[in-house]
Amino acid sequence: MNPASTSPMAMSAIPARAGVGLKPEHCGEILECWPDVGWFEVHAENYMEDGGPPHHFLEAICQRYPLSVHGVGLSIGADAPLDRDHLGRLKAVCDRYQPGMVSEHLAWSTHMGVFLNDLLPIPYNQRSLRLVCDHIDDMQTFLGRTILLENPSTYVCFQSSDMTEIEFLAAVVQSTGCGLLLDVNNVYVSATNHGHDATAYVESFPMDHVGEIHLGGFAKDRDSTGARLLIDAHDTQVAGPVWTLYERAITRGGLKPTLIEWDNDVPSWPRLHAEAQRADLILARRGADDEAA
View: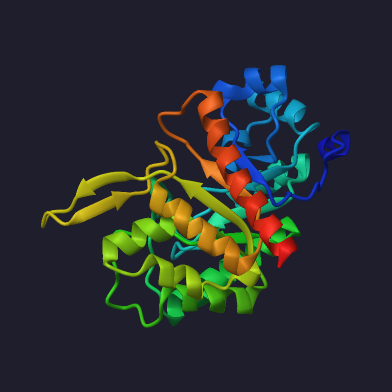
């Protein structure tokens, strides 16, 4: 029997509301109170085994809520072919749960069979563009669906880059037909680290191709010169400047499904839910403004 056929939520569209990342710490409470939240997102790599508690909880939650699957390990930017075993396991997760959206990072995390515990940046040039487009074409063909590609948080720049990040992402979309996942926290982190204008980045982003937005928290640090350095840590609430950028993004691009990412130092469910409710209020206010215009 096809596992996906057991779920009435198969291929359920993701609403233009706030969602949250599903954490084991919260599953029991979610199943008890069925909170008012738009949708849930899971990391595909946490569901690549056949059974166990993660699938037990996710199958129950998928009966009530739409689902998005976010990959963190396919290494789309690596200078090597995609790992066929990993791609097969990702397809099994997607076939089983039929998520409304599937996304991956514009980054690499593997080298010569070694998996690195980070999402590393790539140079923005024609060679990288051909490589990334080939990998996305391969991924979309194998999965039989369109994916979303997420803009990264970066801490270094490459002298070999000959286009901006936005130019690179727009070229990927044009070549592959994929969509984009706009991580607003990543925009703020990267802009701060490199001395760029985060608002100008959002103003220039190809919002027509955005299928999902991410919001999260960052950690503060200093680099070797003492300059301010932000880390995309996902370990705290969304910062004020990120909320401001988010409002600008949906003013430009319209209402989008919006995920609250809080993956480390996971808070209580009420605290996480409160972040989602704040995003929902912003979306509702923006929607009301659009209707009144």
